[in-house]
Length: 215
Ligand SMILES: [Mg+2]
Image (cartoon, rainbow, N blue to C red; front, side, top):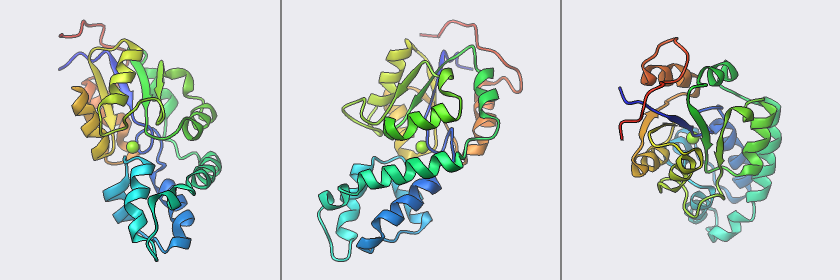
C-alpha cells in the first residue's frame, strides 16, 4: 500500500455533483446557436475538458457554423449563470465536511480547470475551504488538464511527494498520470468518500499515514 502524503481533489464531479448543472447552463447559453447535445454526448466528450477547447470544437456544429471566438463571447454569461445556480443548489457530496476532517493526517488540495470565480465562492459557501492547503484554479497554470501542470503545481504548493489524485474524467486522470501520481477514478461523486477510503486502505478508520514516502 503506497504511503500517500497528500490528496489532490478535482472539484466538479468529485467534491460536488456540478456536471449536470454545467451541462444545463451550457445548453441554455448555446441554444440560440442550435447546439443541442444530449447529456450522454456532453458527459462522454466534454467533462474535464477546458471550456475554451470545448467551445472551439463546438463552433462548427452551430447552425450556421461560427468561429470559436463567437461562442467564447458567451463564456462570461455561462459562468454567471452557473455561479448563481450552483450557489442556489450546492449539490455537495453527502457528508463532505466530516469526510475531509477525517483526512487530517494528509495535506489536501483542490485542483480544477474551472475558474476561481466559480469555485472559490462555492468552497466558502460549503464551509470547506479551510480544509485545503492549496488551490489550483483554471488560470493558475499555463496548461490545463490533461497536461500534468495543475497537479504538479498543487504538489509543489503543498510540498507533497507522493500525492493521491481523485478524479472523475479521462482528461483529469491523464493529467495525474502525466504528473506521475496515483489516481483513483470516481464514477459518481457520491461514491467518492468510500472509494478514497478503500484506496487509502483504512476502511472507516481515521487519521493520516504517519509514514515516510517511499521515494
Ligand atoms: Mg471533474
